[in-house]
Amino acid sequence: MDWGMENRLAQLFSPEGRTQFLPIDHGYFQGPTRCLERPGETVAPLMDYCDALFVTRGALRSCIPPRNSKPIVLRVSGGVSVIGDDLSNEEITTSLEEAIRLNASALGVSVFVGAKYEHRSLMNLANLVDEAERYGIPVMAVTAVGKELEKRDARYLALASRIAAELGARVVKTYWCENFEKVANGCPVPVIMAGGPRTETDKEVLEFVHDGMQKGAVGVNLGRNIWQNKAPVAMARAIRSIIHDRADVAEAWDMYQELSQPA
Ligand code: 5RP
Image 1 (cartoon, protein in one colour):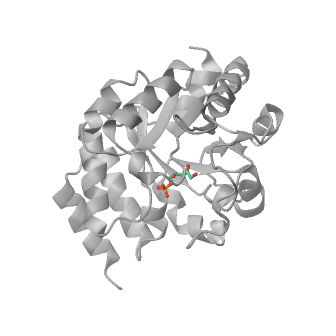
Image 2 (cartoon, rainbow, N blue to C red; image 1 turned 120 degrees about the vertical axis):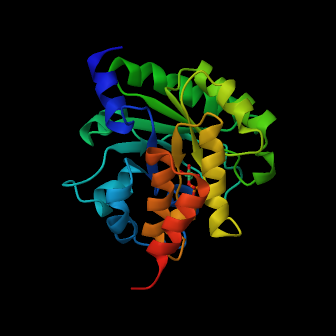
């Protein structure tokens, strides 16, 4: 592996290969998402408890100070909206030159396997990998399901993750699901888990993160279940303890409860 590629991956993953990305890219198709109306304010208290930010160029430039930031995974696909015709109809929105100017450590692009614009989204990934690899920049594929949240089972996510890896993604972000080992085992590159909409209870987040880590995930890219929590820092730190300190659910839950108490 070339030095630049290896160095960028080392910025994103611990020496054990684990990571906790903090995504704040949701506005690119759904506008001012709850608790992310002012991304800079959402991120500030969480910055010490993540390994990288997943963000668009617009939010990065306008909301994230360039000093004391974390490595950037730049979301470079989009061009759709939640009220538009079809969320899978994405194109690449940000040039490689711009990504380099922003000092991105990696690029993120969605793929919509089985959707109307499956082919377009998969070619977005393949073409982006061709370009980004020339400059030693890793590409993370996001296995997106649009509004069809019910698609998130092991069979579908394993299919989508494997296809993304075959097209050259260095990292795949997918959802946690029952039998997550089928997803991780079928994917030859590291897999990290997104959170999806808020879970019913706070403890469920810790349970699925722990389960996924036991079954082969190397980390998370978890947004709403952190920054929409009533105690975002407590939740970020509890999740971090599972990922980096190998805490079990009981230990992480204790940590969350203690840190979320009002002072
Ligand atoms: C949105 C994304 C998000 O990065 C991803 O869904 C993770 O965030 P959350 O944990 O809130 O689902 O790709 O387009």
